[in-house]
Amino acid sequence: RRAVTNASRTSDQTTVNGYGFWNAEPLTVGEVKKLKPVDIASLPFSEWILQRMESLKKKYGKAEIGQLVEGSVNAASRIRGAEFFYDLAADKEMSRRLLEVITQTVILTYQ
Image (tube, rainbow, N blue to C red; front, side, top):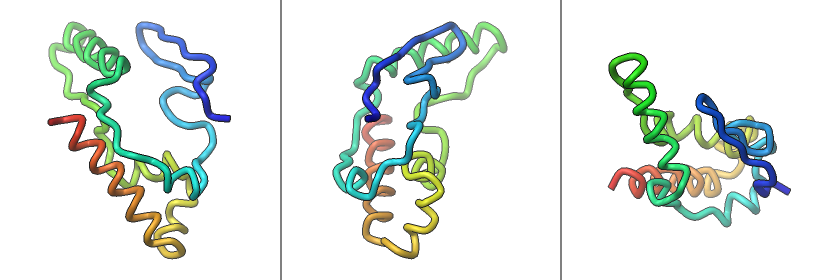
């Protein structure tokens, strides 16, 4: 359902399934419970980020971008949709689990 079926790159943007970097549909509670931290720095996509940073440095003289530069709550709402804010009250265990996966992903990425 959310499999990458159409990934493309241009010099300014990466598109996956026509929706940019994020899931087009929020993950279900069951899908969130199966998530595990990911070492993004070890993935091929990480190379694109580094290339983009170099491109920005050439264009603007500096670039202050990295992987997962938004906050954990923003990332959680991108994964779960607006339901994440409901989840904070209704399913605290799942909400904590999702925030933990995001935090561990950031730690793995920058180690």
